[in-house]
Length: 162
Image (cartoon, rainbow, N blue to C red; front, side):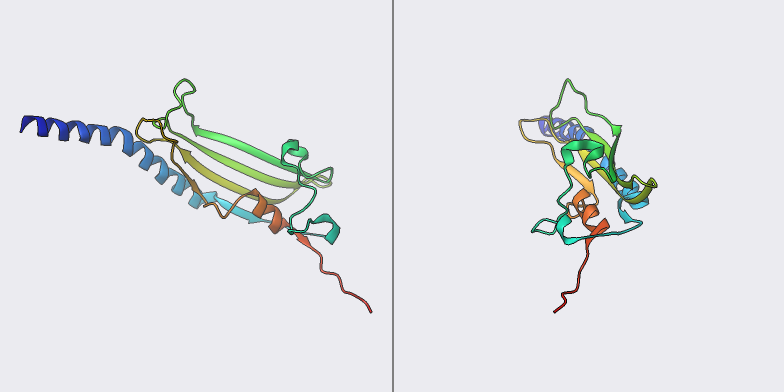
């Protein structure tokens, strides 16, 4: 009987240590996301059809080019703010982190903000082990910087004259 009580007590302590931090960070992600998370478009740009590939995405977006990812006319800015960093010495699934990613598309000619996307995410906070850390993000996977680009840059629909 004493062993059962001891196992239950240890299980309760383990649960309190490992799971409450994960749940707390998920609640914080939701709270912050409700304030300013998601995609906001302030101005749309209509481009000719030759600026788009066959799948409808703009063909001048090169994400590896950092701020110059959208060529000479637009600035692609990506800021990351870490609310909680993981310990680099111990990157197991029990280590948790929380961050805010802020993507901005700015027109260079007048430095006008065309649109932005704010993402909050949590990684880790799981039981220690050989598995991959869990993650949580807000907004969900259906919103990303490519969706922002698609909402800002639209294809012009020209008339065909006969």
